[in-house]
Length: 114
Image (tube, rainbow, N blue to C red; front, top):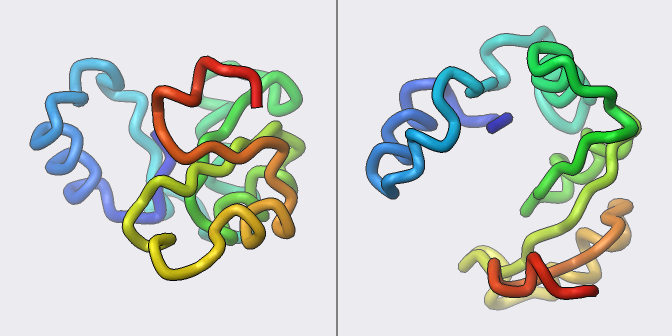
């Protein structure tokens, strides 16, 4: 999990949603790098900590700055537009224009060809 939020908020959100056990200590925030999104630093840091090659890393992002950061890191990025912040605007176009390789609106779409 690589987030622009601070570490306490990320931990709280994962606990609240029951997802914390899926991530363990693999939580990375902009507090851990010099430059946050849209710079690639956060994604490169997370990949490095997990010994993952950036070109073999998939990022799921819901923001233009996050898509921009992932692409700058040399990663594949799928844009998620199912959040409430895209109800009144065309998130698909925004994320695609930022460089998203694929767009999806529901987690059930994650496993289908897009």
